[in-house]
Length: 97
Image (cartoon, rainbow, N blue to C red; front, top):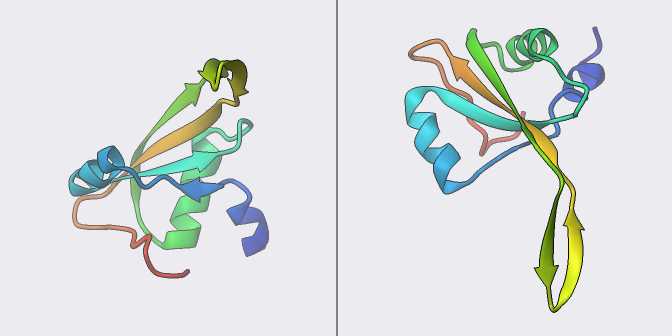
């Protein structure tokens, strides 16, 4: 499988205060396409980053409406995956791949 196709299943890493705290528990959070599933994500992440994935949790964030400057604005939802790595392994998101 070509590496370009492997990266299609991972849109971007999510770097927030909460995800930084999760990294202490060997968990990494990625934004993934809506069509992604656990088995394909596991295979792709293990091939790209050369780590062992023990568990994947997927969360669907729904579309929502918020008020900005007095107008209703639709905020598009997304899908995120919380990947648990084998103990002692990690992925360095700050360096290039």
